[in-house]
Length: 197
Image 1 (tube, rainbow, N blue to C red):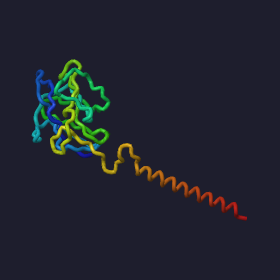
Image 2: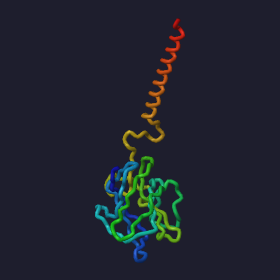
Image 3: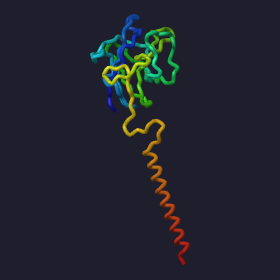
Image 4: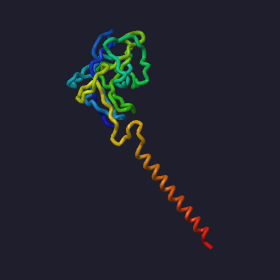
């Protein structure tokens, strides 16, 4: 599996260290492109890729979200857990001690398009928690390193969504043709036997 490092930049959330402090959680994807099944690692870093240290965190869940379902991080209201089925839960953000956050996940089997990371943060709007994404709604994908938006592409040779699998169709037709030839051969053999004295 291929390891891609991509960018999610600039989500402001409440972080739990020794007390409640406010900081910018910056997760960086160096490559703005990925394929379903690829392993992607998001790390805390600035726009140049220089890593940053964060205190221990808890109470944050991370989601893979299409840009059509992005939510602004500007106003963090107590929305509770996301109810939109387009938000695909990856896992909780496990950062138990101070250091660089490295969040590695496998890109889900999703349709090609533009995606970002979504967060549910309990301490952002207690007690229900706030739901928001790293990229603002209507953010356009930029084919440059350190982008907020990750473009998921269809692997080469993969049929388009809704299109028939040409490889499978070919095998089905081949099997039908072979079966037809065998049937015709057996029929001809039976006919010849019937004509024999």
